[in-house]
Amino acid sequence: MPKKSTVFFCKECGYESAKWMGQCPSCHAWNSFVEEPVKNIQAPSGISKKKASYNREAVWLKEVSLEEHKRLSSGMEELDRVLGGGIVPGSLILLGGDPGIGKSTILLQVCGYLSSHGSSVLYVSGEESLQQIKMRAVRLGADKEDIRLAAETDLSEIEALVGKEKPDILVIDSIQTMFREDISSAPGSVSQVRECAAFFMQLAKKEKISIFLIGHVTKEGMVAGPRVLEHMVDTVLYFEGERSADYRLIRAVKNRFGATNEVGVFEMGNKGLIEVRNPSAYMLSGRPENASGSVVTCVMEGTRPLLLELQALVARTAFGLPRRTAAGIDYNRLNLLIAVLEKRASLTLGEYDVYVNLTGGLKLSEPSLDLALLCAVISGFYDIPVSPQLICFGEAGLTGEIRGVSQANLRVREAVKLGFNKIMLPSVSLKDVEDELKPLCVPVKNVREAVKFITSGR
Image (cartoon, rainbow, N blue to C red; front, side, top):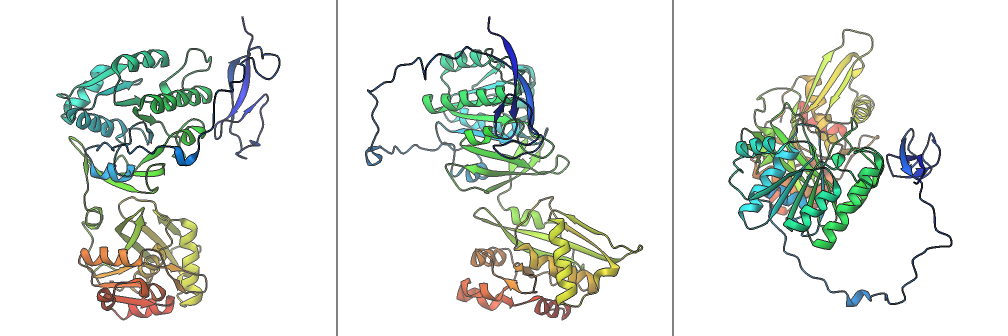
């Protein structure tokens, strides 16, 4: 009978230690060690009991055959965009998000579409009963499809199910509920999550099964468990947005088969998640007319330009210390840009509260938001409405200069497509814009030129 003992694991990187440490020596994270029971197995004498095999040979890179695998469409163009063009056979995909945001809903919709188009699907749930899954499938209209269901958490039973059913698509809901009998720690622990993820990774590569893992998130918004979980999988998707709002965003933070930071926009309806084909028009719906402090900007989410409204409210403070509030943007960036306006444009904002909001509930940190934020604060300070046909983007420096941003021509084309005929942009980015679009552009070199344009009411 092997003797049981405990070891300490780092939740961030999976580093193992015999004693607790305040800081992980591997990833340098603080207070990340947790204690878990393990079995002490007698180590074999020598280097290894397994004899070395001299039959293996290294393969020349030029001799490796590159087989083109046809991607499977998920039935949702927005999700296919985020995945890089569709689901790759043999890929391991991790989907994380807050509770109730729609992780199980969208995967059940995808399973229904794939099953109706000839793919065999196995949906394994460790959190819900088969009746609960059936109720959701009825609501989504996927109850008529041939989807195999199983309520199981034991990895050995799931392995037997996969060997019997031989599915093309496997959904695990969720990875934190799975466990292996030979590991004594509880489900959801660092060692259980790490070993279960390693098992599904080997299963996906060996059997060419596309596996979706649903992951719980912590209060910081990261997938619960060791950070090695995100390193193991091929793709990491995060659900963003508030549960109280109708919209949902899926962002790819890691993708071995496509671009990262791609975003898919969805709207939560009575029958599941609905794609938003034109997110810019959707985000600008309900925009106020002739209201000061409202400015439209264009940000790049992956390869997609996205138009958003940035609002600023500047009001005289009732206290000695003015308030600064930022929703959707970096709070420190707001303070920095207010200081630039005070120093380089002579705006006396020390007696005013400044409230900034990025509509739609998004949280962005792209530097191209700087010019729009400056224009919104200027408009709110002077109480001058900005032209509804104006859009702004550009990065601001500490000396008041407006610096260039990437994909300027793509941003301008997206703005013109949605009816905007005035595009304020950095002067250095004008050369990247097509000649037929340059007459619509308003180039600015510094903050003073932006103040002059906004206060002139053009």
